[in-house]
Amino acid sequence: MTAPVDVVRSASGSHSLPVRFTSAVGGSPRPRRARTGAVVGVLTVAVAAVMVGAIQITANIGYDEARAGFDDALASTESSATVVRQDVEELTADADVAELLVQTDSGILALPSTRDELSAAATAADEVSGPAQDLLGADLPVAGPKPDAFWDLFAASSELAAQTGDLQRLDRDLGDVAPSIADTATRVTDAGIALLASAAEAAPAFEAAHLSAKNDAVVALRNAASAASLTTALDESAVGALVAMQDAAAQVVATEQVELAEKSGPLEGARLEIEAFARSLAPGVLLEFDWNQIVNGAGYNGSMGGLTRWWWDDPDRATIELSNSVAEQWPSERSRALVAHEVGHAISVKCEDMYDSSTQDSIEKWATAWAISMGFTDDANGVWAYGYPPQSYIDAAYGCR
Image 1 (tube, rainbow, N blue to C red):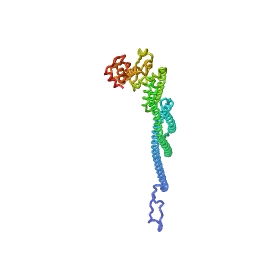
Image 2: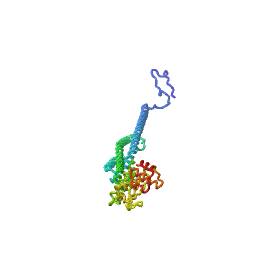
Image 3: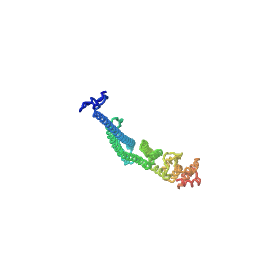
Image 4: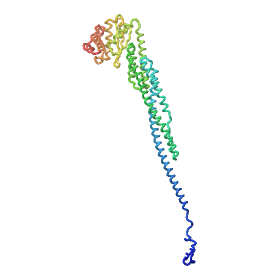
């Protein structure tokens, strides 16, 4: 270390400066401007990092909101599509049945106007289901995985927003078409049921117009009409109900033609008058008639024969067989009394609890008593063949109508 200079002892009027003011420790100091620049650089990087972080957070939040909106729109659209798809499938099925009914209807029973309305309803169903099918055929968008970088998040959010708008428009369109599908389905169903109801309602008049038909055919028509009247939906059973009614109606016509052919000839007019007379005595009982030369051992030499078969089950029905001589002697009191006796057997299906049906004698006495109660007093009413019935039977017979 250099010794300090003694200023007092130096030359007068002058002094000498020391070579160094401090000890020899340390070097030159670091420049102040370099330190400031480093601080500014660090701050800039920090600010940039904060800004990027904020942008990243904003991008994440924006994407999450866009994704939530997309998911909601997708769920709503899928729900609407499910409902519309089910409705369209049901409408298409109903329309298919409606077209089958139109093709099947022969016009033998149903009113033509009901068939025309059903055909129009089926056409309307095709017109409504077409646009709905187009909407249902649209491909629904699928959201991809969430990106990482904020620039990708912003792009994905924009795409989700556009897809959400498309979904919302499709959802609205599905909602708009749904009521027309429901209305058309109701129209088709109502028109189909109306056609079946029209055919069922026509059955009684059709039956009345073919009185000579066989009982089995008439019963089949009644059963088919009853089943058709209970139809509430359009399905295969609805078509089956119409087919059954029409087949039964065709059998009614066919069996009547056979019966009329058998009754044709000189006695046809008398036979038909007798059948009408018998039906008038037993309203509500389904009567079928057969004619032969000999019935129950009678028919020759002025004798008359009759034979009746009846069934206790529903509906009330019977078959009456008469000899040709009954028609030959018509409308004599003898002929009328014998027919009344046979109708007494037939109408017993409505009054089975009024007499003892356990023996043939009591059965015949009942038929005779019923004829008497109806005012037919000629001995052909059964008195000649079976004797006079008990008064109790006659009294009971007044209650059988």
